[in-house]
Image (cartoon, rainbow, N blue to C red):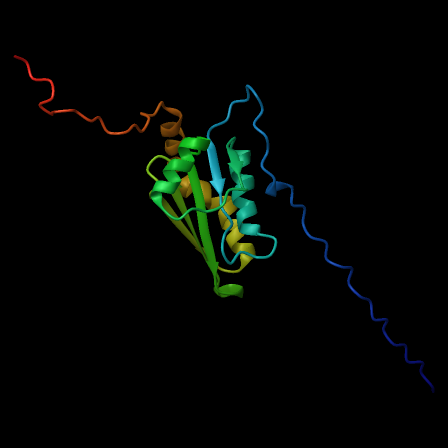
Length: 177
């Protein structure tokens, strides 16, 4: 008895289309619209090609009513954070890094204050990228949300402008006779 051997067709999977990237655009501030504050999310070093960790942070903050800027470049020092904050009225800056590969990845996110320029909170997650993104979506706000809210409230208050130091002329040029 002869049997026909049918080969399986080699089907190629469809090409992977990149996820939509509209979150990478800064949304214009609508005149008269109320916002809870301004937050900048810098590029996260070591994040995947499509930046899923950064995307989760940006989407979460926008859902919470914050104006999120993603086009700013990271700065080096606390003084530069303060200067940028005064120019842009930015309350919080978020930076971070993802290290490792696969299930041994770890992500560390740092929040910097716009007023002082110093680090005000840090949070870490570990596991594969999907688990890190899930934890950011479900746990990030619970751990650092109050700090972001306080920072945005502090920035919205009027600030004392930086002025040159007051100089007093104590010379003897104008002596009284």
